[in-house]
Image 1 (cartoon, rainbow over the protein chains, first blue to last red):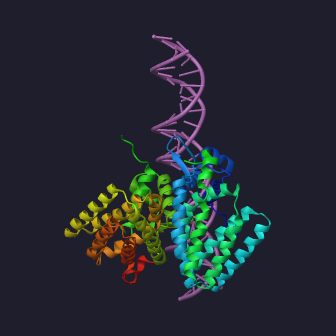
Image 2 (cartoon, each protein chain N blue to C red):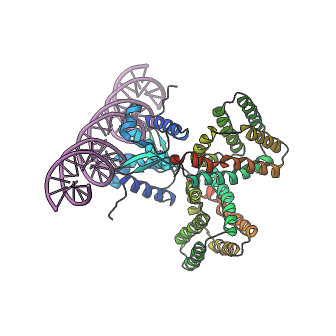
Image 3 (cartoon, rainbow over the protein chains, first blue to last red):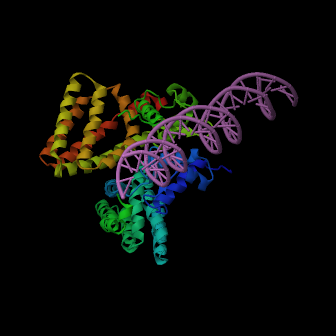
Length: 220
Length: 220
DNA sequence: ACTGCCATACTTGTATGGTAGTATGGTGAA
DNA sequence: TTCACCATACTACCATACAAGTATGGCAGT
């Protein structure tokens, strides 16, 4: 199976990754022409990726003027946190009621890997594992579609969390909360699980105001 | 201001409206060529609209084979209801705490219009007013971005609700619930408001199984 | 020095021809 | 009859040319 993804999808995936990782800074001007040259494809697939990114609010297209990476909208960041809090509280309550064993195993393994990564001070890996942890929760209660929709808002939240990485991630607390949540699921303690999740997610934007002062050019 | 929207946006908007209203039935094959002829534009803007619709799951693109209107995924419909329940319960609690007067007025007017439309047996108008009612709630507590993201899942939920229109919408109950919710917001009774919202949204898919039997070709 | 105009070099938006992969129907051989 | 093969007519995908709107810098006139 040499099934190669379409050029459009490749460009879209790569650009999105670069934007969310802040490799492409908020406000950076993009042009169809320029991007098509760097990716060595024509303008058509580039344009297709711009359309998709614009729909997610990751780029802003100004007709006949230009396209650029969107600034981080702190209102959207807060809304993303709000959405996740409401949905993840409900999801973890469901998980406490009923959660597949194999998924529970995955959660346990995930937390173990988190502990390892923390030892290695590997922030990037921790970030990925954190994402995986929450995704596994949604999959375990069969709410994958919900998780996918959240990702759209999450792209904005994640950009500010990436900024956070450069300051003080204090992964220790987050990792401990993950462990406690797994424990709560195991013991079917929904109230405790919900409370843990609420505290957990409140940390994700605890320093939004600070970041906004520190990187004023990145925010709207 | 003769500012005309781009051809791509026009095609996208019109196709989406046709799909959600079931004017284009689930499973209907679409082709860039064919659609470009009916809209009298080239294939490029049509293709652009397909990309956007595919991202929302309203059409399915099979590379080199064809594109067609997606079938209604009843799991997604249920997830959409789940999402709305969690988020709207939280939103109406916020509204009970604090809600702008002008927005409250809008809600009141909206309910009045609903009563009128119900007299006229105007189901389509009721549907629009119902959407407006909930959107106003989100706007009043400054969660517009959240509402926009919900719309993506809502497209699937709405297709099944449109089917419902042809059977028995019993708008009376829904309208009464809207009235009660406004009253609860006025009297800052968050617990009652949340309970009302929960019951209200549970009605939206009360007959999903029936619809699935009645229109098997429309569902996945 | 300052202002108004315009050529020019950008940008995105649209149209179109060509390419490669896929389904289909017919034909000929076993 | 049945099966393998192939011509053909689709499809989405991509490259490219052109159109139309916008910012910019220089130049002429005041």
